[in-house]
Length: 203
Image: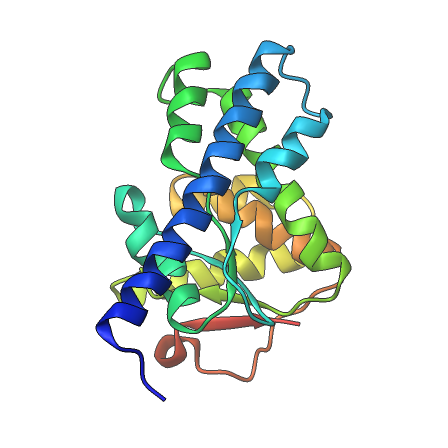
């Protein structure tokens, strides 16, 4: 059975409305969180995280995004293509945090984003959801090899941050997701050709 143009339009409208509703809830929770004193242990963090979870399916996709085009490319696009769950906060969440905590580098802003991100992973981790780490946004073999090397560093070292920063030039937020998965007992399937598949399975 195929979707007619009308059915597709109705389906797209419903999905768009669902996303808009969750985005609005996340932004409101963030505004409330900032007004209440920005406690990283606040229940508002969980509310923002819950409303930043999207998609359906049995797997959860994380990985590399494409910066300003993160919503339409990278791991988000892959998750949508394969019908999987994923974490993605509305861009307004980042903008509000940048206003509150300005600067190219800001430890408080990073801590807030990390708290939301880590909270978003807790439900899938607790239920044993398999994770797929998308490398699709990386355009060169060197970039893919460096990403895999960074993940191996995290796997084999508790004090991994200086080494990953030296390798990648910074510590992307996704590396903390990898650290959380490994600390919680996940391991990645090393039998796959990551260069061709551009997917790392954490199980």
